[in-house]
Image (cartoon, rainbow, N blue to C red; front, side, top):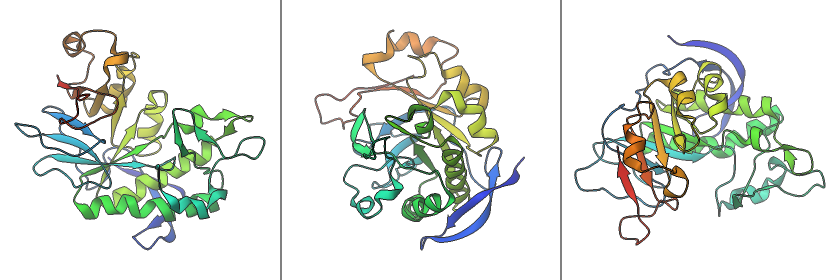
Amino acid sequence: MTGRVPLGQVVRGLAAVLVLLLAACGTPGEGVSLPPTHGVLDYQLGGAYTPPGGLDVVVRDATAEPADGAYSVCYVNGFQTQPGDDRWLDHEDLLLHDGDGKLVVDPAWPDEHVLDPSTAERRERILALVGPVVTGCADAGFDAVELDNLDTWTRFDDPSTGVVDAAGARALAAAYVALAHDAGLAVGQKNAAEVAATARDELGFDFAIAEECVAYDECDAYTAAYGEHVLVVEYPDTLGVPFEEACADPGTPPLTILRDRALVTPDDPGYVYEHC
């Protein structure tokens, strides 16, 4: 069932026309399809390719094309800037600053700034920039969108290094979900196991994409919220057990893969790929 509660102003359409919407709650969103729960998954943010035998589910960057014959998920960085995206240079007030007024960057990704969704006005303007990327995924033929860095409010909570307003981040997430559902896209929660139940029940996410949930014993948090609609990506440097052993664990979601952390294509010597 799908209920709706008022969750603020969102952008509708490609022209960033800002209107008041009711944000969708519950899963799945009305009229959207969820990814299959079995088959062959790949996570291809480092470059698109079609492996021998094909794919059932694939995640690709918003700049790539969806995969023919596969359920295709479009990657969008919803809460941080993408490297090289110069649009934000003219909107520095939409970026998080620390206690000294300096721009905050993600220590793990120093070429990404963190968005500041603390006010309705800021959220409207963020949606004006990111919203067309989300709707562009639908126009390109993707089935769903992955919204990365939902968990910024859990990682940036120190005044000395910048604080992301939790309520503002949730409101922005709900606005993204409403926009994506309106465009016919399912919406995947990316990471943030600790808020999986909230992400589904209050924000309206439809499924989850979890990095390293086997390595950090978090898969149960996602499956409790989304059942088997959980796409899992593990990495060799943190998995800690043989991949075959991870796959044999009944708590591991069926669509679990092992990838190299750089997510390179098969022609790169660093390429790693296995699936359960």
